Image 1 (cartoon, rainbow, N blue to C red):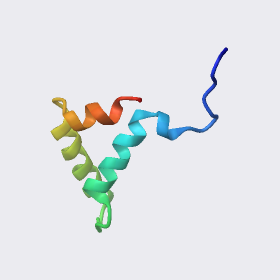
Image 2 (cartoon, one colour):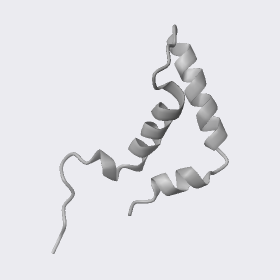
Image 3 (cartoon, one colour):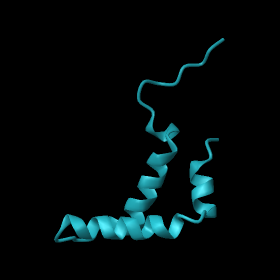
Length: 63
């Protein structure tokens, strides 16, 4: 028997969890006068995570 995923299931996509954490840690409830500043903050966070991270490993593990 095949088990089909629902047509829209962002909780099954690991990148959605990463974006949720990124928004919460980097851009939530902050004012950015220019889009370039948002990009810089997010890129800084991704740079921190680039070498591997226990938090990311857990976020991307589908249970």
